[in-house]
Image 1 (cartoon, rainbow, N blue to C red):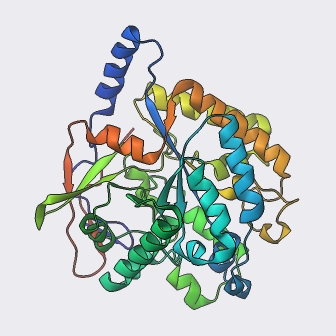
Image 2 (cartoon, rainbow, N blue to C red):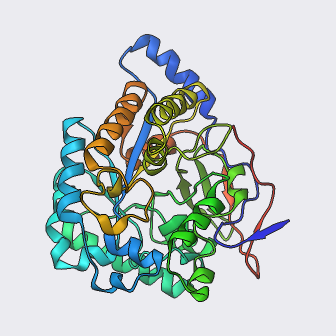
Length: 370
């Protein structure tokens, strides 16, 4: 048995549905309907400027500086030109600030799904008590509902932070899916990079020591699976992991792709194109993660120079993201995470139980996945 913070307990294989069988079925259906493609979901964590400054330990975050007036219209125009509808994970603190209301309303009015990304965006969510978790979820739900009219059915923890208590709270509150799993071996390297670029105190680093997870997360599956609570057979929650490169389990999300482009545009494009083809070949229906900074550059936010790929101009980054979304759309039908979750939920599921260890979280039989 192994213990680690921030990762819920696993007791059987993570596969919700045999994705290869699903892909083969899709391929058979494609012979009947040439227009049918397997699904891929696209989401964007609407992390604001203040949330990055907070993670870095800068006191400047306390005035809640925002780049929404630039970032939101830019990525909405980008998506509209490509006829894409995605899921946007909104932070509750941003939803209650009047200066952000117009931007968040624009997202909802454009037809995108709004999901819950916690209220305070603290990557140590796994350390929260049940009451604190319910407060985080409830305040964000209420703010989003009041502002957009949407009832949130999806959640992603800040910095991929999660726990048994978070999952149980999501089940009790009727959520359809969670998206906090990040199956990569590179989490500790990303955390080390963040700490190196930060001004964090020893105490702050201790709070953030679960940021981006453990190397053991690389053994988690790229395929959806279902959490169940052994105390209640009626409660379950679908997990849709943030997709990483099949077999190698290195990130393919927008920020990593753009980070690679800072060294070689050819390398980055080849890498992402290969990732899309490998997902198709290995039966992975990908869930691609984006951030506002994927559409912002050094010409927009010089204060965020510590963030990966923020040394590149916005025009270049948007061109690179255009290539990535083009390749993904050519191979998969891009949908919101809710649509992805509803599609998976219609398939037969293998369930996984959640149990809470007395101290920390125990991981049993970690799944290996291609």
